[in-house]
Image (cartoon, rainbow, N blue to C red; front, side):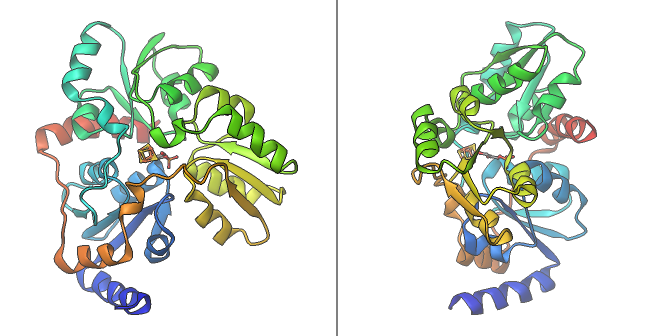
Length: 301
Ligand code: 13P
Ligand code: SF4
């Protein structure tokens, strides 16, 4: 089947199955083009919770589909590529978190949405890169445990009056962007603004002009009067920004900054997911109920 035939078949199956396709901003272009809703982690979890559809095809990584399954337990949530994980979310297990938090009684746990359902179930409140500071600030305690991203923890610690105690995790994609890459980008693109994702190292964020989640990058790309922007984030982010903003140029800071897991989903796999209703992602009720409390607390904030 060629691409047009696949798109036609997907459109037909979506109607038959009453399905909606959600895709993260880092997904390959062909998958973004087939999506009904594109977004960052926060937007996608909100849309998953609100959709009228019976089937959600989640084009992203495992924790994202799990979050959708937690928020919409009666829906059929499909992950077209079951092997698409997030190595950062695997950097902490529920057992490790239980042991760690026992060492810090009285401190609430804030978990980044990039965590397993089991870790969310052990946390007090969830956050994403677009609301992390607000979530931490909303807590009454002066000291907060933060899992798993130490870079996002450092980003929050700059703007918050709270003491943030970080877990030692990181995203290998953002972690391989260095201060030297920002210096080089400034030399090569002197007219450009540089936007960094909060998962970047603190030095990279300091040297950049703005720190933005992927959803905030989408909004800023529309608003900016700059003709050129360098993105210190996953290289595939340029696809949506270039498509939505003709005449503006979006340059990845480093071609090597690629999330292989995000790129495992293809149009053919989206079609196959709809044909076979696979792979369904479910979360046991006992874990889902506790994880939902942490996610819904974030959504209220
Ligand atoms: P956003 O919430 O900014 O989309 O980030 C998700 C993610 O996995 C970034 O690596
Ligand atoms: Fe996980 Fe990093 Fe990929 Fe985002 S870019 S899904 S944090 S590995």
